[in-house]
Length: 335
Image (cartoon, rainbow, N blue to C red; front, side, top):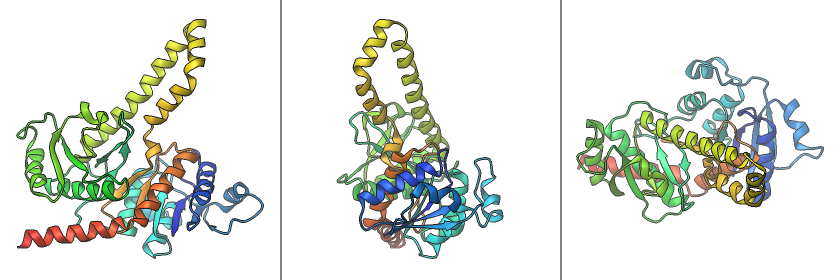
């Protein structure tokens, strides 16, 4: 298996990317990596001896976080992210990963890799933490601000296939994010989506509320990109604020500082449990090959997690499973 990785994407690139790649290659003996980026920055991080399963595609051009997504993909044709996506398009690589500009990666995925036939819009889909540590897949979190009921149906099918095959959850529960659990709650979008999901070949459990997400109410939660992005940022912001408040409490006095020293490892474990980058990156489901967005602040462990996720996506042939199910759904609609 060969993966293409944007070595220049993310706040801690290229060092975090290179270190994460090293961890992955120790873990997977059948994996090779193409790093796209500035060879003068990458080579010193690889060490004196060349790794037989790492190759570097040199380019000094990269996409910045403030670049306009659609325009920059067309303008910066030699950017590390663009060349990475082209490697997947040309089948030089099986999948690609970047921790860079999210909008640019979505544009590169659409323009270079392309959509699965029958999928109207791709969905950006991270796995978020739950109290029991199992996690849940949320889609969409911003690939499309607006959506139609048919899009949510496709999100549910793609998400269900991914969770069952990659996260190995048998018959995953699929919920529709809504303002209440009653069947007739919500907007016209959610009402129409509810009807489609009820008839779909998935384990649809009905509407779910945002307050229950971290309790593990569902394994897959579908919504439009506007609501999904708000839910994602709320969960992330709440976790950061909570740990900031806990830190302030522990730093108030000598007594609390001693208590902090005693529970330091436990708090670190709790922080890791609430860090969704530990579950991998956010997959762009609906494209004809795996495209993974790692968190912008990814360290080496987060890059390793994103590579593990991508490895299993390719290994379990999830894209072709999605293609087959979409075709099957279209056939049922025609009959």
